[in-house]
Amino acid sequence: MTKDKLIQTGVIVNTHGIRGEVKLQPWADSPEFLTLFEHYYIDGAPVKVLSAKVHKGSVIAALEGIYDIDGAIKMKNKIVSIKRDDVELEEGRHFIADLVGLRVVEDETGNDLGVVIDVLSLPASNVYVVKGKRELLIPAVDNFIVETNLETGCIRVRLIDGL
Image (tube, rainbow, N blue to C red; front, side, top):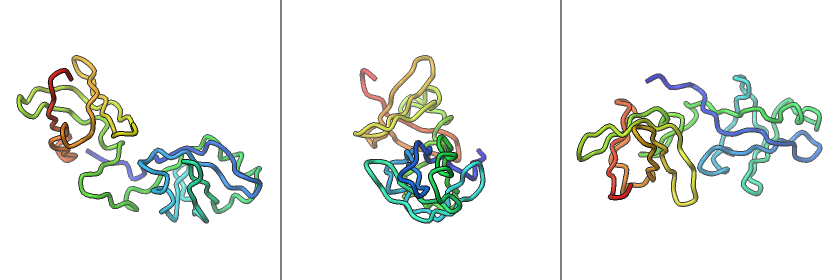
């Protein structure tokens, strides 16, 4: 499975103030994660991050080359990505982009349950949306997830009655 070099991590939803800062809606576990990068990638090109801070669940960022509200307005609705190589994930953590498309197999029986088509980020945990003969919602917690193997493209799960 080839992995994209860039991972989409949010979208610029608005301007902030008059000095060219932008408000970024994060697509990450926490907005703090997006404050750690020296560069964001917008339209595939690197843009130096001059400053980034969390504000009410969003990220307020000052980007090189954008110094007034007119420049910031032009960035609205742009997708922000990061370079995959700039991130070292903790053991057992994965990018959502890497999970979508993986086969899901029941651990005990080996039954093919379908493919991950989406990952919902809910307060308690992420939930995998699996589309097969029927759609399943599987919490991404140790009680359900036995193994996630990106090399084989498979997630082994333990189901409970009623799921």
